[in-house]
Image (cartoon, rainbow, N blue to C red):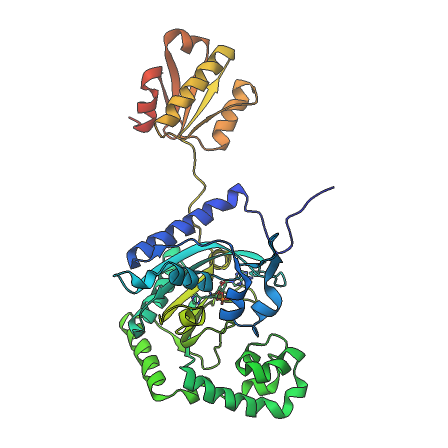
Length: 422
Ligand code: HAM
């Protein structure tokens, strides 16, 4: 029997993990500069956490969750997203009581959604996300957006589009909800069965439907922005002002609704506009979620955040032809010519590694020529040759592959010579 990776997941082989590590470290560096600290939560949570926060009429909750019962009969779900778990941890560990507010957190880890597999859409994917909880200043909305843009820019992406919208507060949303019902109700029979259910429960979700997205009524649907009350409009204006101060260009899209229910006020997405990026162009999505903390039993704690998948970031880099860190080349490769030399090679290898030198040797008992070829193939900077002569003289032949020079170096001095080539 041959086994394969489960549909919608993939293995990252050694040639690919270098890129991932490069992206991960530039993300951590960006978070350090913005003063966001890492939080790690479990990959599974109580199912109800997601049904309550993401919303039970959303695609995520209705169709995409990996939900199972553990042996104790509890319903658990592999996290489809990171915001609800982070806010849960914020409430559970009373981070709202810390003197330093807002609490600025970031996370990076696998998320799970049972989605149809296509380019840029996986069933297990890695999200990097941030959550700033405890402030409703429009300036922090701009900070969060700026952090996301900075990650992309530092990675070398140029073809980006930031789209923002305001979903307003509760009052705004209620007025808009009524308008949506009036708009869709007369023709709801032409919509899919999910949309028919959404009409009463959550008509905003109709705008997000993948099945009916081309229905003419979608284009003429009442826009949320027309229903913004004064304080919501004021808030949105201040977010835009702060973005202007940061020199971040954006487009306002009144039709931008996000696929999760916890949002209000600011919502945003960042797309790739690179040619050949593929059908799914959204790299990152986020927004404000005032009320989520209360919804899951916590105190009032307004929040805003975003998440992006590393997979889509790497796809965008590919589409723009940006190369990140090459896989690292070893400092040294030891070529041993006979059995006694091999033993000395084992000892020397241990010594070099203890000194922090990336080194390797042959483990296939190959002839000298094949060993030299191997050293060349992996791009070793130094080749250290040990044979009968070298053992007798207590000095190995050390070849500097870049300079093309070679010299005899006493065994005790090899680590220093490789570390600081003369
Ligand atoms: P989301 O829009 O569901 O938001 O996902 C955010 C990002 O995760 C997407 O823009 C995309 O980069 C990535 N993503 C989602 N699904 C997949 C998939 N199947 N395969 C690959 N990448 C995917 C959230 O998850 C919110 N928690 C974001 C947030 C944080 N809002 C506030 N704070």
